[in-house]
Every structure is written in structure tokens, then in C-alpha cells.
Length: 359
DNA sequence: CCTCAAACCTGGAAGC
DNA sequence: TGCTTCCAGGTTTGAG
Image (cartoon, rainbow, N blue to C red; front, side):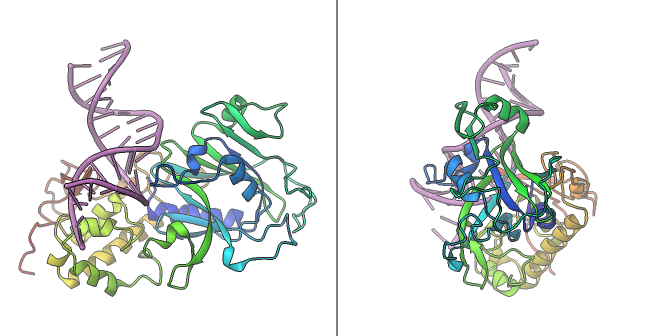
């Protein structure tokens, strides 16, 4: 499943391929991808609204914090007369959840000539000539379909392939047409449109990102402050690592890997661990991230595929996660698994002592 | 403050 | 073989 390094790999791929591209069409194949996380009945755009808000906008950049990706959109090229509201910049926000993938595909058909800021291929009503398609496959009904004559939900689903939940049609500045598909088997991933606001640290972020802390790869991440916070807490060090309001981007896999690397038992309370050791833990988190990034992202269950559809390779580098009963690669002791809430923690009982030794 | 569990999903694995 | 149940994961929310 995608964690921070995988998301960063996706970000790099997207950034190099679609920065500056204009959205010319949107297919929402399964509206559940548009729901908000958490709140069951939280308001969200329906597929048609989502498509309408996206079409005609230019993707200005691809940013990341933790496991969140967001793409700030340039002023509406369909309504250039509208007064720009710099404080109200909207971004397309994506979270891959457990099984999400963002896949790019070059379209055979290319547009003629470069895309200008005032594309003639859009009409004055703001509708893209390429069409707005939004379907709810669960009900088999086309919500809005300008090509209803030659397309049906069944056709759309067949064209989409398995687990494609949404698709953006993009045209780059060089005129090349590209499809960006959001594929997600388990539908834990999310797509949303959110306005950007200052996060209090001088960075413009979407609302859903404003509530989480910086990730360890950001320059603003403050090791001393985070360690101090951990030293004050009675919570387990693993719970602290997974607390997105303290550190973002660390998931279950990399938490176990980092703890193994720093030789810390997962259930020890933060306040029971020496300041020096906690600094070592943060360093270990970065090392594990860096190692994963070097290898181009990880995949141990083949659900994760990078932006071009290639699988990552990091699975072989896991030292603790998923290795119950197999020898620790440092000391040979068998890796154990313990329940951590409703999930698992893997650790080496020899390298990661429950109580710190004299050191 | 902290922990746990539920809800959201699917499909593979395990149990019968 | 075929059915049912369980489980995994990230995130948010709410109860205790």
C-alpha cells in the first residue's frame, strides 16, 4: 500500500507529465471516490459538479504533504473575466488510501497545435467540447452525458477497466492528450476539490491537509519539537509515529521498519525513551523513506503501481513488517507479531527490548 | 490525554 | 466444492 515514499514517486511522475496541462474532460465512474473521509454523510460534490469544477482549469503544480497529493488549479480559463481570488485557489486533492493508483496514459489522438489560455475548443457556456461524463455505475445511470447516443454505463465501465473510479482527460501545453486514471480497488482513496489556505507555517495547503503535521521530509519539520512532544506523552511510541497531527506520512509498515532500524520496542511509552533515542528514531524514519525512494517505491502486494503502471520493488527490503516467524536480518532471532489495536506490529524481541538496557 | 472500535471497502484466505 | 466469516489497511469520529 502506498505510503509516503510511494506517494512521492507518484508526485514526481505526475509533476513531470501534467504540470501545466489543462483538464478537458472528466469521467466519474464511481462517485464513492468523491466522499469525504470520516464523516458518513459529509457533503461532497456529485460527479457532475466535480467534473464541471475541474474542466477548463490548468494544473499548476503537484504538491505533497504526508500521503496527501494536491494540484493547485490555475484561474478558470473558461471565465477569464472573473476576478481572480488568490486566497481562494482551488486544488484537486488526492489520497490513495489503501489501494489507490494514479495511472497516466498517452492518448493516441493529439490535438492540433498548442493549447492557448483561451482555448477555442471550449464554448462560452463553460462546457468542454470533449464532453462531461459522470456516471454512477452502481445504479447504471448516466447522470450527465453529452454523448449518450454512443455510450452507456456498460461501455464506460468496459473502457475504464477494473477498478477505475475516475478519469481526467488532460491536454498538455505541447498539445499531447493524456488520461489520468484514479484506480482504486478498495475505495479507501479519495478525490476532492478544496480551497487552499495558509497552514500557519507559511505553506498553502488544502483544508484536509491543514489538520495534519508536516512530514519528516519537509524543511519545516521540527525534530526538537516533535521529540519534546513525544517525551511528554504516555502513549506508545508507535501510536506517536502514526499520529498524523504530530508526524504525517508514516503508516503501519514504515513505523515498524523505523522502529526496527532504531531498535525500539513499539509499545514503549514516549516518555520512557531517551531524547537521544527519539532523535535516532526520526533519523531512522528518514533513512527508511530515503531507501524506499531510491528503489522507486515499494510494493509487497502488487496493488501499488507507480504513475506509469510499473510496480515498485521495495518489498524485498522489508526487515520487520510481515516477517513473523522469520529470522531478524540483524541477529537471527525470530520476528514476532503483536496486536496493536486492530492491526499488527512486527518486531525483533532481541533487538527491540521492552525495557531499555543500561545504554 | 489516551485507547479502542466503528465505519468506509474489496477480495483473498481461512474455517466449516 | 461452496458457503460464510474474518481480515488487512488509512483516516476520521466518537465513546469510554
